[in-house]
Image (cartoon, rainbow, N blue to C red; front, side):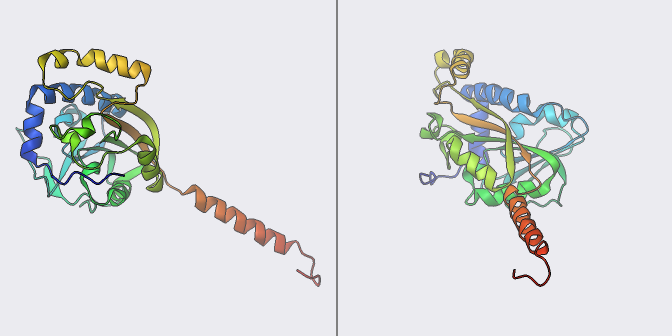
Length: 250
């Protein structure tokens, strides 16, 4: 993988981006992909990690409980604007939650920015309930958005699909749904912003490889398949020894 971009974004940069015309269109496109995977969260506990508050509005209204943890290097904002705040600073690799505390995790502007992505996903696995799901948004290594630092997706470590698949497999997540989104170029021109929907239809319809982001819906696995195979081999060896008649050479 290429080295991460050295500059770290803070919450001021992220808020300014989502308040801009390009950010408004990005929010609409990415939010549609996230909520298409997320489905109903009625009665569920939902955790947002990274800078995810722009995508939590519909969730907060319906979910049993909503939390949003932001990394200390990024900073934190109070959210929502009215009522009790649900945001807090946290080390994303050591989440201040007990095991199996949440049913859904939405991770945006997080995985690409941490020094140890595997530790982050391992702790997400720990706090998810059995069968819990992770919705992950991460820059696409082959996309234009990862190559331009004028947007938040141009900072940190982008991923190819194979790199992301391997990382999730190693941390016991099973991708159930996969989407690419943000096919439009990251240009602030009004013309390009007006054509965003057409870019999405074109890119998605032809499965073009230059999308800006991967959006993955993954389920928490409970067992390692390798361990099961090892147990089966051990059981086979034990049975073979037991079937040797007494007094005969093993």
